[in-house]
Image 1 (cartoon, rainbow, N blue to C red):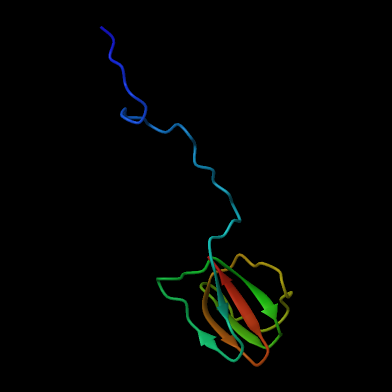
Image 2 (image 1 turned 120 degrees about the horizontal axis):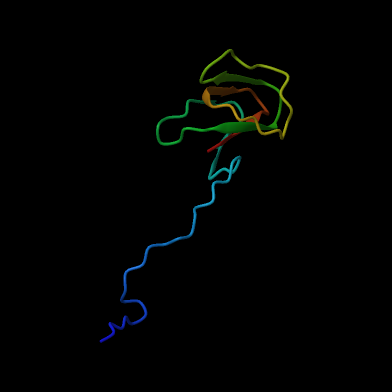
Length: 95
């Protein structure tokens, strides 16, 4: 005697492999001009970009302070622990 399983009533193990997409991000947080921001546990970034301006002080999680020489619109895969923006500068934190 055969056991018949109706559609939707049987157990099934998915065999679809989850695709790992390196350099893909899930959310962005904007740090507006004339603002100091320190990311917390609820939003720990993994990258950033300078959207506009050149008046910034960026503190990487491990390393020296960045104050100049970054290209606007370029994504940098560096985790920041503090962002200090001057007038007219906008930084996007990427997670």
